[in-house]
Length: 313
Image (cartoon, rainbow, N blue to C red):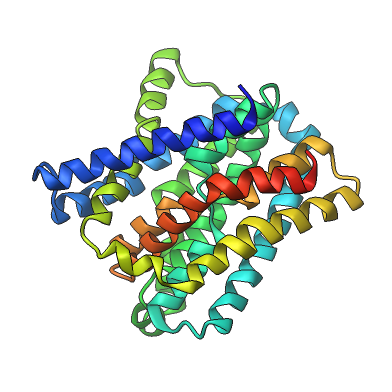
């Protein structure tokens, strides 16, 4: 299956799972309170388990030492560029308060879990999961530090002490990351039964997240999202311009071709579902995140093949 066919297939599954969430709301199988509890379950238990199992099953100590530096440095560079881009876009469109903070987070973080992993495993079957395991270490540290911080309501950021804000970093996902790094470096393996059970739990992250998104779409006026020009700026800047430019920068510095392709694809991902769940849990502007997710996810059907064409990979 070619990369475009694989992408289309993943988006079809994405649409079906979102539709399941919509049906859940329409049939009263789901409601707003249930969605709130579901987001907490995903963020505090199921997602951390997924992070842990993906890392310990996707990399060895030797693998980390051989290509870890290149993956980690390029990942840090990617997030530095996206961080600055998000800040610039919030200033260009004069986005203030919680809306501006959540928009910034939606610009930085992409939907790696559902679209990125399947696509990359199809394109890079031999080393794709290794790269993803290494990428996930930085990705989750960034998400649970900067991403979580940006989805905190402004009043909490202002009134909380630095010590209280730092406590937000001591969460299940961060603990899962550092435990996974330790297990991988020490070459500790889980017993087969426990590993299979935890992997099964972690695999529930994607469908539950998408059902949550579909249900959440029903709680807001989706038509309003279509008219917000700032969402299309994310598509143009984050999903087209930056990936293409970044690819040629990596090529100029003679970064491995596979790693350059890997990072370029992840840079162009649509907005991450976790941002919406963060915003809900933190009682910030969830609607902003949902709008970004909807517009960018639909747009990636065209932008990802376009980026592949413009970079010739």
